[in-house]
Amino acid sequence: MGILTDSDLQPGQLLARGVSRHLRSLGFAPLEEFVPERGKRVDVIALGPKGEIWVIECKSSRSDFQSDQKWQGYLEWCDRYFWAVDTDFPTELLPEGTGLIFADAYDAEIVRMAPEDKLAPARRKKVIQKFAMDSARRLQRYRDPKLAPLPEEL
Image (cartoon, rainbow, N blue to C red; front, top):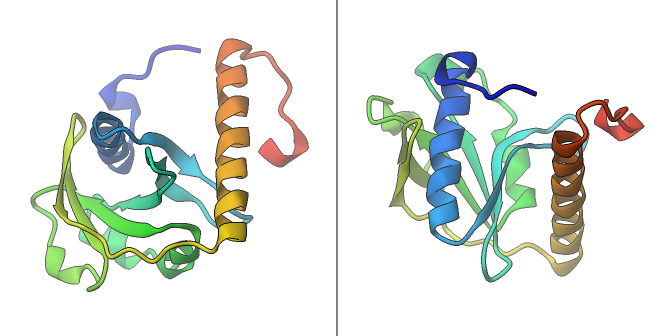
């Protein structure tokens, strides 16, 4: 498994990297491209030091944002929901009642804190367990790249 360079990544992936770096500096454990359930994939989910769960969708352009019709389905998987965009993004497009993060490939800044809507305990347990399983499987795949994928990883 080779090291990825900036030229290997899509614009949204570069934003996700900057967001993940910033969240890590705040004590969060970020995980990119998390699938909470079949048919949904969030750009970044982060588990905070107090067990809080944040979801961040990274949008690199107006068309990227306008083509995303699934974002409201992600609200049920987190305590706080954010958009991450670069400073040139037309932020007036973003829905009220969501958080805003300005990001680039190297770092990010929370511009508007998302309102908190705490997950139900059963949902929180499910998300944290899936977060842990996915993280462990990714680490194992990194350590053993020739490992055959499990059916749920296909």
